[in-house]
Length: 283
Image 1 (tube, rainbow, N blue to C red):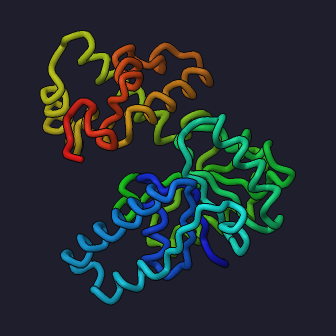
Image 2: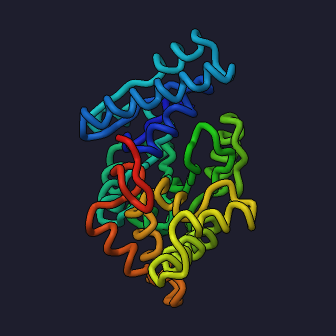
């Protein structure tokens, strides 16, 4: 595999870049915003410092990790020598569809095009391309350097060879690949998002407060993090986008986003990344 190109320097993008660089891959991290790239590299360095403190990495290994990551603001330049492109753009079809069309034009047919999408159809993404057989879902969990699961999503036209290569690559990252088929929300978010949505409804209807709802789920159900805190970490805008995809795909009432979630996103209260969601965070 030639170098890995990660598109998008947000929380997921910088985590994916970190994981590949940690395991010896040459990585190009692309974003149109130089400020976003600077912030991403600072985050990767801080996260690597934590790994040094936990004796996961040595100082020398941290330096090697950072040296393996190149940043780039030109999409054309980024993908010139790519063996794998992983898209980690915002969870909107209006952003992802044109991007995959452009990638199909820029990349050689043998280059695998993966999406870290949480819910958008891999089959639809592949339909934007002349070579849909090379389009696959590679859904990492947050925080990427820590979480073991990679949900591998096979689109209707994704080739078995591509699936096999991505599974093997995930194992090289010391992750556990789990293959699923292409239906709205796949497995992870089809099950997780209704729980988060119901927790928001529980708050909206005055059944209990934020901390009380999270405490019940942590202490009673052994969840490491309550659903409202988890929603903040995922990003409330991302949760809303996923729920909209699920509702559009299945038309089932329990996927309809809670009005409180809709209002919070409209107000810019997006969770940890904005500094305010169900909880308040230092920025």
